[in-house]
Image (tube, rainbow, N blue to C red; front, side, top):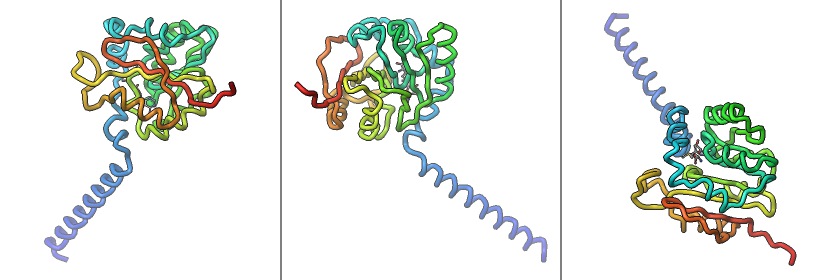
Length: 234
Ligand SMILES: C[S@@+](CC[C@H](N)C(=O)[O-])C[C@H]1O[C@@H](n2cnc3c(N)ncnc32)[C@H](O)[C@@H]1O
């Protein structure tokens, strides 16, 4: 075979290989959900996010003590914080629910490790961080309170997710959502990522949660308290 023919054959083989690799890559991309493609590794840089989430300047507008007072956390309350990240709220919950249990659920293993190390450092035996799945928080027991701060919009297929969540809640359990209001705010994500309060209420009432009144007044966020709309005997 002449050198030219060998070169053409080599070139064709290389072309076939590149086409196959590209096809496989495109298939893998199609198999990933939009969430996994765009958001899954957004929280990789733990130290950076710890500086953002735990910034003391946040306390001024996040008003964690007022949030805890509004929700009404007791010594024995069992709580799951979904999207616990570096522990801003779960650490504070654990300091109040000293005879209860707090689970910090996150889908990023580095954040779970970070929070468990923080728990040991700050001696909070009643706080444990657990790796959840994007579609199932895998809470180890039924809880009195599920708390979700600035994370609701990260959850995909929310109808199914919140339907499934009920199995981790006590019949009298409550679900609290804190998230940024729509509009141009000095803090929080871009407007297009945010969900209006009415949208959250519509989605959750559609799958059986019932909105309860509360007195929270946060400068940039809404705080919604739901219970399970179960029929209780008179
Ligand atoms: C904006 S951060 C909120 C952090 C925290 N709640 C706070 O107030 O400081 C969103 C967090 O939710 C986590 N997350 C995203 N989707 C999730 C899901 N389906 N289940 C649990 N955690 C999720 C992310 O890994 C990230 O730690």
